[in-house]
Image (cartoon, rainbow, N blue to C red; front, top):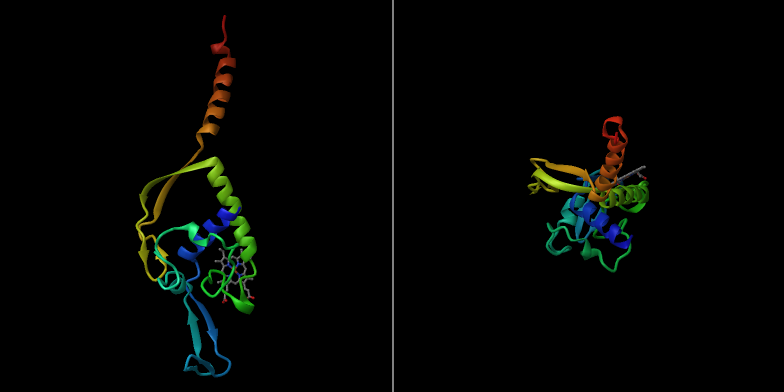
Length: 163
Ligand code: HEM
C-alpha cells in the first residue's frame, strides 16, 4: 500500500483538480516585507507549487518514487492538493481510500491500451487538450476463464453433443 500512496500523491501533484484556493485577509498581514491589506483576496494556486522546479525535480515527469521514504501525504508546505490549515479538505482520507480501491481493481483486473490523445499542456495546471482515449479490457486470465466456461457451455449444447 505504500507504493500505492506514492502513486496517488504523484497523481494529485501532477493532475491537481483544484486550480486555485481563495482567502480574504481579515486584517493587514505582513509576509516577507510585503503587506496584504485587510479586505484583499489572496489566491493560492496549488499547481504553481506542485509544478515548481525549485520544489520538485523534473516537475512534469510522473515519478511516484520521488515520495519514497515519506508516508502518505495529505498536506504540507509543498503539497496542497487538499488545501491546508483549518480548511483542509474534510474528505481527503476518504478520497485517497476511494482512489486506492479503484486503482487496485484497475491494476489487478484490467489492462489499459492507449488509443489516441494524451498530449500534455501546462496551463497552468496539467491538461489534456485532445483528451486521452483508452481501451479498458479484462486481463487475459479472466478471458481464459470465461472462454473455458464458454467452451463448456458450447460442448453441453444439444448440437455439440455426441450422437
Ligand atoms: C481528490 C479528491 C479531492 C480533492 C483534490 C479535494 C480538494 C479540496 C480542497 C483543495 C479543499 C480546500 C478548499 C479551500 O481551502 O478553500 C477541499 C475542501 C473540502 N472538501 Fe475536498 N477534495 C477532494 C475530495 C473530497 C471528498 C470525497 C469530500 C467529501 C466526501 C470532500 C469534502 C470537502 C469538504 C467538506 C471541504 C471543506 C472543508 C472546510 O472548509 O472546512 N472533498 N477539498
